[in-house]
Image (cartoon, rainbow, N blue to C red):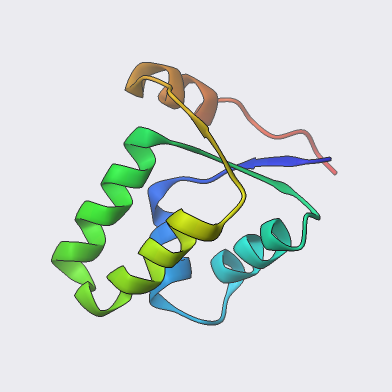
Length: 91
């Protein structure tokens, strides 16, 4: 199964909008078509950004956090940045 590491912007967008690619990624995770991977740092960043920029979307985010089949990793910021620097292979 393909694993998707979600960053805070994906979680923010999925909580703020019922349509779009970010919400579709979460739907695929709920349908067990992909594995959703997040870090504690990403969850905290998304929560903080929603509280400041889109407070109305915060309840949807909290539902995702408590019900989504997330694999939560405890990665450090430097580890996350190094993973983000890797280019995806051409498909």
